[in-house]
Length: 472
Image (cartoon, rainbow, N blue to C red; front, top):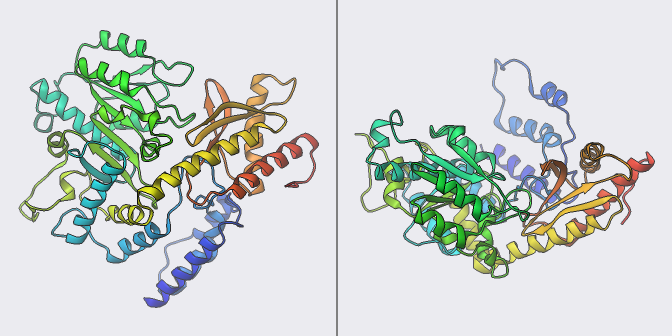
């Protein structure tokens, strides 16, 4: 076994060392990968070190450089060194971190990591928490707690009686909400029709009048979902104004802070989230701005009783622990890896100052990148950098908006094909755009310069039809 682990270590080291030079886009096609990895199940086994060698030799061309500093798509962070190493240990220890009895150390480490996260984000200390697979399950966990609390007020026991015949719940959410809110509504039995979109203003934030009107139309229990940085322009809702409005009408307020909630750790940027601590629940990701490896979501719920009631379970063979944390009381999973350990490691490595520096650095790099792209001929800045997000669009003089939609997608494809940087596209207010998302601890000023030079080269190639050349 040591041979296989040694081979994996050497491959991992080579991968990390090569991030700065390796293309950010995958080089292998679907057909290439299917031909390499496909075929019938082997009849005979292969030595473990040979399997690892096979994987490392053939998988690399099908991987994105998302762990590196030149990846600006989909708000995907890297892994700080201690968190990556801790994640290796989590797999090596191979604990089922569902119960204290199954892994006492994992239980205590995760308990401390959750307390540190609440302290870092300046959220109510009495709140409960759960480390989930990602923000999707964090939303589901929080909204399940909301469902319990709101229906309990209506004298309905949803855990015992289900939703058939229960009062119908409504979810008020931004028209710019993330799709994971819709999926959570489906998973929890609310259904898509339970979601009432709220109009946003020119800044991308829910208009107070839109919430006021929605509350006046509401006839039953309701949840308000607010954005702590939406995925396109980093817009943060007016928490200090909207949350008291919602609470006065009896609504549960949930915060989608997948990445933006970590701006609370920065003295320079936390004002954007003023009042967010007034909410009832918060969801965020550790594998985004905290830069721990996939997968790690974090659910935080002010009402501990509602959170526990909707998640806990018991059985004769479960060795429940009265004086220690059993994660199964707070998580939707029965079997789970100890994903709180990499969070603990990252926070211990970075400390409060290190997290703040990471947030501030990403925001500064995003601003420099959006400004640098915006200075190129044919580039329109649709949304200046806000926190770590921005939007640009590529235009040709004389083309229709629809033609420039296609041109924008073409340039994104050309940039990614060059391999020096990687971006993703989006549709914002009816038009195609390129997202600029900076969330990786490895991103440097040099990475920003290389990305701008790549966009310049892609534009030059498109206009001239010449071979690729990066200037600068």
